Length: 120
Image (cartoon, rainbow, N blue to C red; front, side):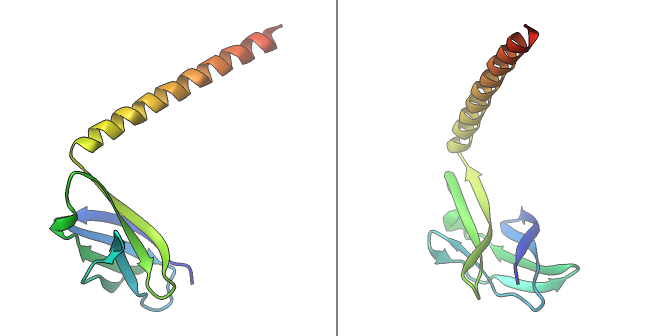
C-alpha cells in the first residue's frame, strides 16, 4: 500500500489534506524537529481519508518550518508541508529571482551560440 497526499491546505492554524492509496484507515503522524504533533485525526472522505492536525503556536515563528507527514505503520515519509514566515521569506524570494536570472542568461548565451553555429 503506497499512501499519497493529494489536496492540502492550512486554514485557521490547522493543516488538512486528503490521503489516498489506503484500503483501510491509515495511521498518520506529523513530525517537526523529530517531535510528533498531538491529535492528528484521520477520517474517511470521498476518494480517500481526510487527515488534519492543529499547528502548535510554538512552531509558528520567523524562518522556514518543515512538517513531515509520516505513514506511522511503515515510518515512511509520504509528504510534507512548509510554513515560511518573516524576513527569511523576502530573502529567499530574492535569491530565487537571482538564480532564475542567472539561468536565463546562461540559456540566452547558449541559444545565441547555437544560432551562430547553425547559421554557417
